[in-house]
Image (cartoon, rainbow, N blue to C red; front, side, top):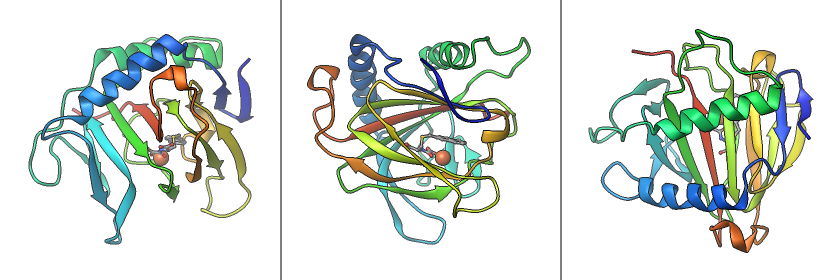
Length: 209
Ligand code: MD3
Ligand code: FE
């Protein structure tokens, strides 16, 4: 069932059971509460991001990871459940577990997209470890744009990511430009716990500390 979109970029549609999706949506609601909860951040060039985020373990700020949010509030801890899910996801996507000695997963970014939110084309290159990024998708589907390693522009491939899908980005795909040009409102499975919007949990190894 895994589909290799590019070398090291593997899409596994329907990987999360409905029950696990509901459990993750509940956890995202918990993580969203409190002083270190869901926020809208400023972009490197000054505008506000349309995506709302919760950072767990570390917070990405232009262009480094920090243990504190921009106002000094400590980042909430990284839940070990997400390390377990990420490792299981890599094993299923690649057909083999991560090799022994691979650094642990220690960062998760929970991204919430309302119907209008989008994310521009960018690379994720602040991590100091070459460990595949794991993306878990909940709620509404979106158009995910997977590009090349040279520029934000063409060639790129548009993939529809739906609630319950897993995507793993490792090897040569780890440094590819990628973004979310649009959400597809009203496409969520009503039984999967999120009635509106899209949640994406990206799980990474910072290689720090
Ligand atoms: C490919 N998030 O948080 S998930 C991000 O749907 C981010 O919220 C998007 O891009 C989202 O940085 C896309 C898929 C994703 C995440 C990280 C990657 C793809 C990636 C890192 C390297 C290559
Ligand atoms: Fe990214």
